Structures are given as C-alpha cells and as structure tokens.
Length: 141
Image 1 (tube, rainbow, N blue to C red):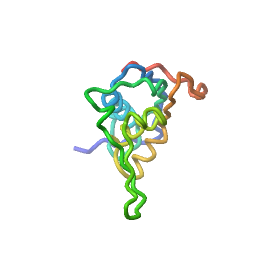
Image 2: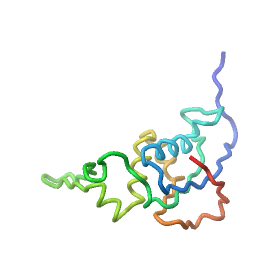
Image 3: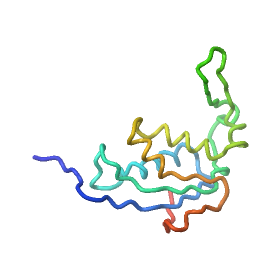
Image 4: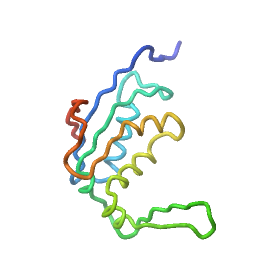
C-alpha cells in the first residue's frame, strides 16, 4: 500500500485567537497543532500544511502554580560568565509576546520546516492587529 503525499498547492487559512485568560502552555500546544496542520486529515509530517495564527491580548495570559516567580529564561552570548537569567514575571512586563512565542517555538520541529511555521505566527500584546487583509476567522481554543 502506498503512503499518501499531498500534491499541488496546500490552502492555508488564517485564524484569530484571543489569549485573554488562557493558560499559556495549553494555549501554546493548541496553536502549535494548528501551525503544523496536524488537525487536517491529509497531514504529512514533512510538508508545511499548517495555517496562520494571529494572537491578541498576549499580556493577559495566565499561569498555573508558582511559575511567575520561579520560572527563569536563560540566554548566553557564548562568552565566559555571560549567562543571563530573567524571571517570567519580568519578561511578561517587558515583552509579553515573547513568552507565548517561546512556548510555541519549543513545541514545533527544529530546522527549516519549523522556522517556516513560526513565520505564520503573529502575536500582539494588545487587542488590535494589522492583519485585516488576511480576513482571519475567530478560533475558540
């Protein structure tokens, strides 16, 4: 029996997600599934079949447990002694979009295919977005 492999142009849709009051990890996993296209019956792992996601109100996401005061983000420049740590609470105040972005990025495949999928993720801290031309459909997660 042959394996199915999609041919031709794959239709990508755009969806709008309101992140107000959503738990970050659960929201990120549902967004990652949409970006990969795993909900489609013709899903193929090596093909970019996902949709575009626009997230608004990223500053209003919630966290369970003590993550706000205990979770740390690390960055290192490569030089000795250059490890920087930032608490989730501080990162949420300065760049609330980056918190959700990093959560979704960790759930996508590494490599060229995952990087292409991330280009279709647009996250905004407030309730407005400039993507009205894509006519996104409201997605309840």
